[in-house]
Amino acid sequence: MGTQSQIPLEPRKTPIQARSTVTVEAIYEATFQVLLAVGPDRLTTTRVAERAGVSVGTLYQYFPNKQSLLLSALEKHQDRVVGAVELACRRNHGQPVSTMIESVVEAFVDAKMERSDISMALYATAVGVQERALVTKAGKRARTAMASMLATVPNTKFADLPFTSLMLLSAMGGATRAVLEAGSSPGMVRLLRKQLVLLCRGFLMSVAAQA
Image 1: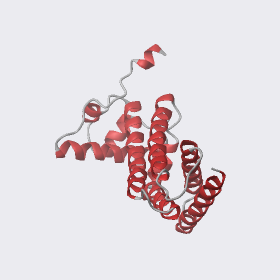
Image 2: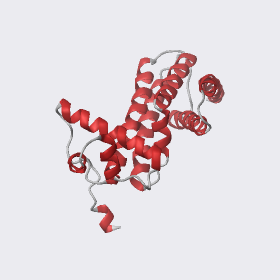
Image 3: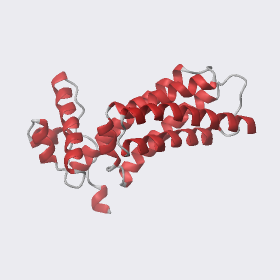
């Protein structure tokens, strides 16, 4: 336990120059490709560096070890998905419930499906304490944005906005993961968007009626 806590998990340095940014993006993409090819257990920094076309020494300039690399890749993906939800929520303050839900569902599903391969690859990595902490942190951000938006629904009050937001985002996340794991064909994704909107809208109407 003590030894593990001493392992540096944060990236060694942040890319500033354009060349460094390109290198780090190549390392991230290679990480996702290796994850898909061999899974998290067989992923190594050597394999990632070879796939990215950089030396292991170059990779270590940014990521001191495998766990740091995987955590950073997971955080990058979480930030992209949650950022899309936060933006949709900010843009829809004061709108009718139907408009809010359609916009947020679209933003969430688009973010997850834009690189469905990455979404699938990272599910297998979010199992440790550090990884779960990242997922929890991202979830709190999304719930805060959702609750803030729902608080502005015209002429409607919800009894418990934090819990209502938790239920909505849990439904979106669970349904989207199920579709991803089932193959996420274009037809399935279209139905996912449509039926998630119906599910979330119906839930909110029910909760509002009880408020």
